[in-house]
Length: 219
Image (cartoon, rainbow, N blue to C red; front, side, top):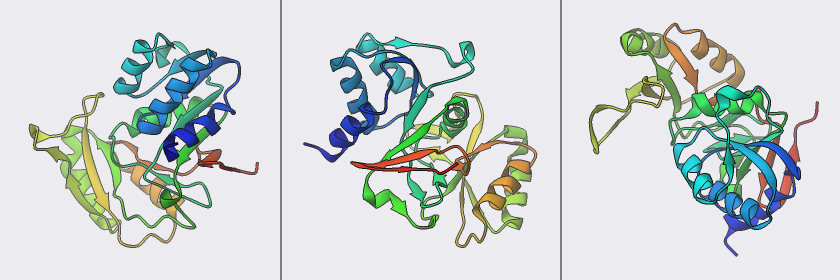
């Protein structure tokens, strides 16, 4: 059995028999969707991912618009890295603003990862991604440099110009070589006028599932 399939099977045990659940993106989530379908769980799904939404609809699962609800029973997602203090970093997908909304609405926000994505303290080998207003790009770059970051606007060979999010904003990848206080960095980044959201999660994660090892944050 694939390690991600095994992780999805373990995640299934955390899902209530009925209710509203959040699902992020990635291959592990795809396996979890299969498990939900096969086990005929009576759940409604909210997702920040268009790909996940389409897959759920293909499986004839009920998908809700996040705008219609204010609370989610439990949500599952992946990340690029998470540490022992449940600080998590997302970079690849570029939908972190919507992911953070789903996480904030959830009673439990569970990250599904393999051991390679866990570290005692975040290493920041992946950039912190900022969703930025177009008119604020130059200003945000200037402020990020003052914080010790190296900003690069995200672009793709498949599209001319910068990458634009589903919200109509731009993505800025910011590399940090050394971070002494993760939570303080996130606060300072969010305080920059023109930053819509960061891919650094410092308070949303409540559980981390490493295949068959469940770590839960103590309240």
